Image 1 (cartoon, rainbow, N blue to C red):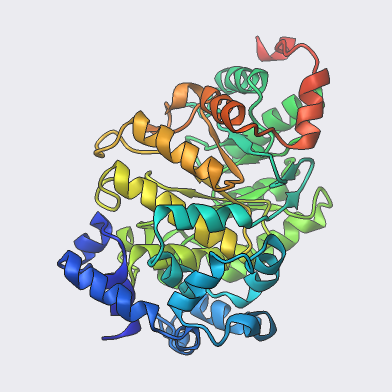
Image 2: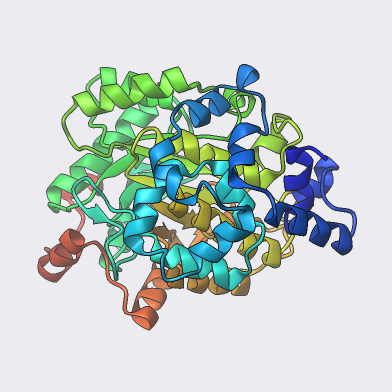
Length: 429
């Protein structure tokens, strides 16, 4: 059995791998694969890429940037031994941070397949990744939110109203980020100027982003638009990234251009999600969770301010029900944090999935206990532009209150002294 086949059969059940024809056929076959995987040396994973080096630039990135010195403390372990070490007292926040450059995405994916939910939470909670722009994200005892004021026609007044609503409920310390209904330069530029004007009017210590394609954002930047963060959806194979219309060279160029603006140090924002490689027919027979972890190698290259998995967005063909969505969200958070990323989650589902808001409440609570960096704040938890269900401003207030979590410190201080959030006259005309 190849490493690729072993990974797929050892994965917890999910509809995407079944659709691809690579999942274990029975629970017994799955357990046997997990037992075999537990005895596999980590060095074997490093020596045998699941997608060949010659045919995939993400594989080349993973291999060429691997830090052998950081890997050395665990180089003698099997996947099962690595799990035991991660759950031991030796795996401290400091040792995990030092280890991150030596862990490949396939190692992280492999060990996650052997872990229960409580294991994923326990290790995720020990990982600490801190990033900064105008606000500081990922500090202990903090959980941030992306204020997501999407509008079906990109109406500026509607977006502004949602922003003021979210700010009044303590949302937006990670980013105020709009998914544009129309991905063109003129619309993107208008939205960027609106977001920046609101941020400046209220002196908000946060950052803004229009989640347009990277090429659209770069053109808006060249036209003088106020770009804080450059966004792009990414995947774990070269072919899947090509389906998104993006290459590593393109991201390199965008990253450099954003840094040259001098607005901040962590200037990239990436979104991922299990199933994207399969939906593009670009998974090479690799299970969807391992493909997802490989996307984190792409993100890690650019020291992003924010990364999040949009865990249930693609639909039940890939994550069938609430149980699969919950497991996937915790896996993604665990793998991302283990690899050194500021990992957040869009806790979401589509209306044709076998899931509901109770499932999202459970995942929200589990991820918050696991130290999730940030979640989404969507008006009413119902995205009226993207047509899916997520988490609301009130959901963030719930989990902060129950677990004693607070916003980013700069944003928290602003909330305590904030001006009255009345709309500017020009927003009402």
